Image (cartoon, rainbow, N blue to C red; front, side, top):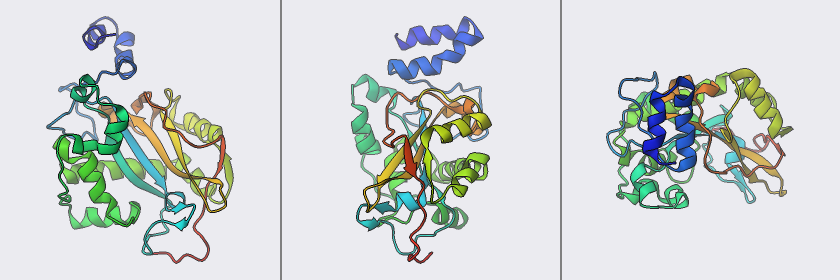
Length: 271
């Protein structure tokens, strides 16, 4: 269905209007947040702002920092908190959709599709300290990588962007589902149980609104590494309520039905 036809639904009936964002995602178009609406956690976008959704990527730090070869993060990696922040990723802007850029290329290149700029973000000392505690300490700066790949080409203010992303992370980690994950550390859990707990707490999720990413440990077992949430750019302030979600157009979940929620190795030294 053409985007022009989809947007025409907005004036017909509130129920139909509410379907437009989801229909747009399935049709491959993007939508622009209404200029009259200001969300509590909105991020002003000055360029390429007509993307359809954000992916909020949160890490389960012990799993994110582990692969088949052992620890993959730096020795100074903090061991608390267990739930960290990976990124907040805008989907393809509409010009790239029209040009037929494969979504896989957008995932790989991000802002490099438009311009290559490795300039690190300028952040306040307080925010830098906050991010150091929740963003994994990878070999090269993950904060700089996230900014150059997912932020700079949109003209977003770096301080605002990372403050909002950190606030979203904090909301989930402090909520019932985040606390349950902390309690499940070291156990095998089911994907269905996590989704069921989330929906009992926050409401029914759209299709693929929450997806899971697993790594493989040295024993070849799947371990939780990340949780990916598909969010409405106009409703970040509603997260983690399900009303702030959109259905994901892409299957990105690679975890089996059951997997382990890993803990830090007992021999590791906390940073």
